[in-house]
Length: 455
Image 1 (cartoon, one colour):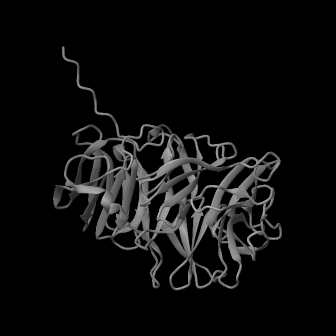
Image 2 (cartoon, rainbow, N blue to C red):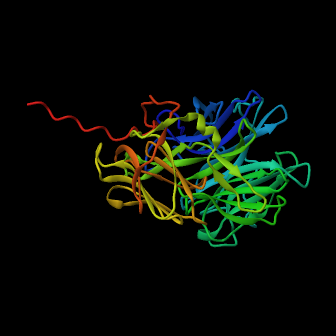
Image 3 (spheres, helix red, strand yellow):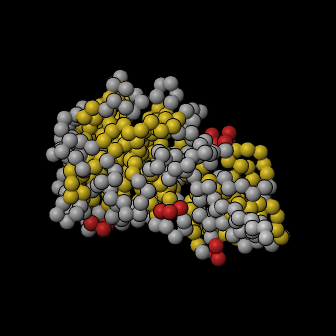
């Protein structure tokens, strides 16, 4: 279900859709490590393809650093490729090095390709095409000028770019903003004041613009402090923008929107892992998660729901222990659901989800908190997904919580309520690559204890 290239992790990414129905993902890639050096370990884009947005096939590196002395000599970060003419254009973040205080020197470059599959890139010149304007944006220490995203302007024949930046009029720790630039030809840009500048976070990353069917706009922004992403809406690109609150729970990051084969809009995002694949390991960059259905009602905030395209990966119902599964249950009053136990066949919970309809909490061994969420309204039903260590919870179909748990052994799912205990039937998840045996494989669970030796 999740994807990372063999032996590596995935960070920010972009999605493409070819005329033959093939999807491609370009992504930052690097090793599994807590001490992640983003100047030396994010120096290339990996590429993978899929026909269903679930099963991804890796195809190696598609783009890398520029030559010594150029604006992108040190690292290449988040990109945005899109169709242009008969081929594609791609804006990307280039890093030249560090300031005296250790801040990455960031600017935005441009590359073209005659292909539609995410390969064959050639740089436009040797310098950046868009740089931070010091009238509005911090350009030295603690600067930000990365994660470009470009769409056609809804007020002209030109283009609009949004970027992650730091508002120079605010303290750096509160200056995270979404910058704005415009162009008539993709190669010459005019920088404008911020599109949005909330003044409450140091980093707003990976902005995504999506024009909705009624002509209005959706802006998705990753929030550095919460490691989640929020939604904003506006009738026009230039606003006014209305903050709609979190769209993805903490742990889900760097979203992208794309049309699925059935025409629906889906969101893919990244999820973290832990070094050493243990609960005590430091969080590290992770994998591309399975898609979520993007719902954008005109009279309510956008939300992410279970995507029906995943149903074909689910097996028949069973009450047997399984590590990769989806289960559902109706709730009324407090319920405590045990998914894994500390030993095979044991009665001590190692992974539990508790919900009273309004508050949701995931706990590990000995009740250690792993994640929690407060629901906007009481939930009548829960859907729970586990793939290896990764856990997702949907309340009344809406994605509300994700977390990690490397403890315990598969067990029949049981729910305890005021009416007693019962077993929850689950549907086993069929993994696209069940036999992967590298650092990017799905956590296989704790091994069964060895049988005692015969005297």
